[in-house]
Length: 102
Image 1 (spheres, rainbow, N blue to C red):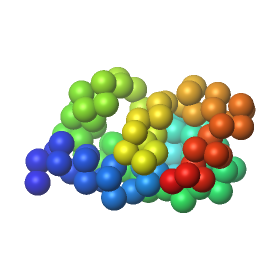
Image 2 (image 1 turned 90 degrees about the horizontal axis):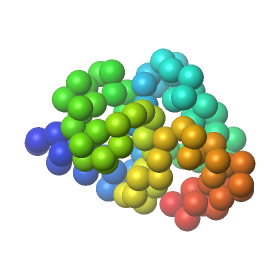
Image 3 (image 1 turned 180 degrees about the vertical axis):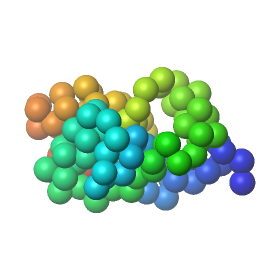
Image 4 (image 1 turned 45 degrees about the vertical axis):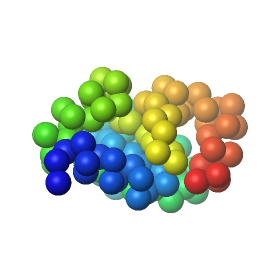
């Protein structure tokens, strides 16, 4: 399976998909850690991929999403954004509602 097909498979088969640096239990950057904290505060069930474990996916995802940084959060197959956007949505009370639809 090529890398784009793997990305699409992950996004389509997980209602909430987080591409991050590290893992939810051991984030390897502050931004990824903040997004995990917010998702957990919303009691969201989510899948994650440690982009450090797959260089091919890490590079391909930047092109696929047209988003150059990590973390990247997808909900129902759509890119929501990175840390700043997720925090903003959470602070406005919109993130929990979005996650509940997933």
